[in-house]
Image (cartoon, rainbow, N blue to C red; front, side, top):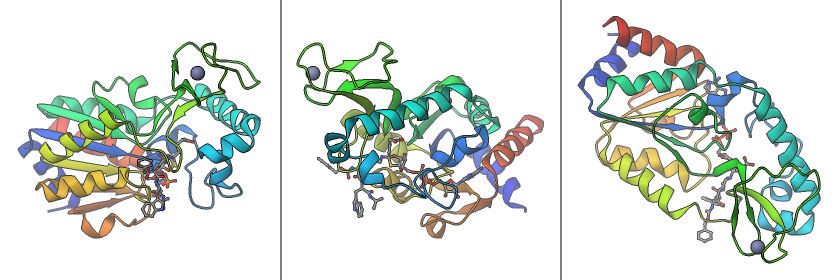
Length: 243
Ligand code: BJW
Ligand code: ZN
C-alpha cells in the first residue's frame, strides 16, 4: 500500500483530527518561512525583532518590521494547502487547526476551528497594560496606549514570552483526544508549540508529517510525506472525495 493510501485509510477510520501547522503552509501563498536560507531571519537577528527586549531597545524598528510583514500578508491569499484543510473538515466528526502562524490565512480559508498559538499579526496590544487594541492601527509610527501611555505592539508571541494560556490548553486537549494528527510545514524547533504533536503521539494518535524536508519531528511520526503541502494536501482530499 502506498503512503497516501495508508493516510486515506487512517482518515476514514478516524473521528477526530488535528492539523498542527507552521510557516511552510503559507509559503506557497508567497510568504517566507522563518528559518533556512530563504527564511526571513536569514540575515536578521530574531532577538532584535521578536523579543520584548528588542522592542524596548528599538520600538520603531520592530514596528516597521511588523508593518512590512502586514503589508505583505494583506497582498496574499490562502493557497491549496489552507483550502484543502478546510475541506478536510467534512471527513471528521471534529477537525481543528492548531497553528503557529500569525497570518490569519486559515481563518480566511474558512476553517471553523483555528487555535492560534503565537497570536495574530493583525491584532495589537499595549506593551505596558496588556490592553488589546482591536481597531486597525495603521500608523507608520509607534503609537501610545490611550489608557496608560505604554507603547502599542503586535499581539504576537515573542521569544521568552508565555503562549496564551487558554490557546495552549485547548490545543493540548485537542492533541490528547485526536485520532490523527497532521504536522505540516513546521521545523518543530520552537517550544512549547512543538510539543503538541508529541502530546498527540503519547495519547495514541496516528502522526502524519507533510514537509519539504525532514525535521526533528520526522523520527517519531508514522508517515512522512515529503514535498509541497499545497500539492500533497489536495491529493489527499481528492482521494477522499473519490473514495
Ligand atoms: C514546507 C513548505 C511547503 C517550507 N510545504 N513544507 C531550548 C529548548 C527549548 C526551548 C527553548 C530553548 N531555548 C529557548 C527556548 C524557548 C523558546 C524556543 O523554543 N526557542 C528555540 C528556537 C530554541 N521559546 C519561547 O521563547 C516561547 N516562549 C516560552 O518558552 O515561554 C516560557 C515562559 C513561560 C512563562 C513565563 C515566561 C516565559 C515563545 C516562542 C514564540 C515564537 N514566536 C515566533 C514569532 C511570532 C511572531 C512573528 O511572526 O514575528 O513564532 S518565532 C517563529 O517560529 C514564529 C513561528 O510560529 C515559529 C515556528 O516556526 P515554523 O512555523 O516552524 O517555521 P520555520 O521557518 O522554522 O519552518 C518552516 C518549515 O516549513 C520548514 O521545515 C520547511 O521545510 C517547511 N516548508 N515550504 C511543506 N511548501
Ligand atoms: Zn496601556
